[in-house]
Length: 376
Image (cartoon, helix red, strand yellow):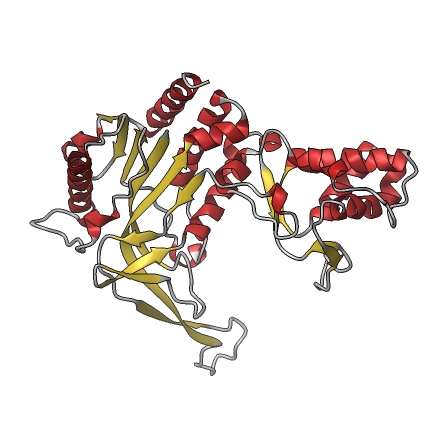
């Protein structure tokens, strides 16, 4: 079972996701230049929103500073170990095979033990590693020479995964046995319309400059563009249920994913452009064959036609493409729902029932749970 999510989102002048030159990211599609927002940028925004949608204990954190997090838990559980918490935290994490070192980062993190790369680790796993470290302390283990095998810490990484790790996956170069395959895939968002990169030339005035100083305190330029984005993601529901070990938990995770996908926004240059919008169209389809990305609807760039907005024409194209693909391959969706504003909802009738967003999230949760429980 797969959950496909499609969205059309109009974004005003903005620089949501910058390239190495500071300009908005782009891509050439259908022979024309399109605005692009990387999947990494949007997944980060989605993960940030998960803390508002799911209990903290069912989530994880991605950081190089795993040792301090374990040490904090050790000290909170056992005050008598507070002065040795860093040593035992480093010992227990090192036993997993993940390499740690003294960071040379300046500032408040100076001198803190850190991993060589970002580690995505669940709060539950941090708690269990802390418990293991406490047990070692009670056994009289020397944290500098623990002499413990990896098997003794593997249990922390077994069992039910956190929702965000199950959805977005985990890769640990030094401990591949703890890797997790992502249950979700998120496409790079691209504009349905061709765009032109533009640049804002700005000046800043020094408030304390002399009255006869007419010069600017600072000058510069910032790149931006405007676009209507097509966004797509899919969730492998069977994989999600396998990792969460529950159809009900997988349904809650899928519903949270849909909500975070629709409502999140990467934070690039938001103070400059205030570009926070919500999708004008959200379509969710439950499929039992394979995921289907409908981006081919926009291989030919969209232009406003006969007084219709780009969003309206894009909505019509999206529905037409879905109908053609499903007819050509005889693979209709099991069920679909759609939410829209600012477009004629009749254009989206192919996608089933028009509902409010809250009703869509609720329907997704109920339908996914029913489908997965039927498999258990």
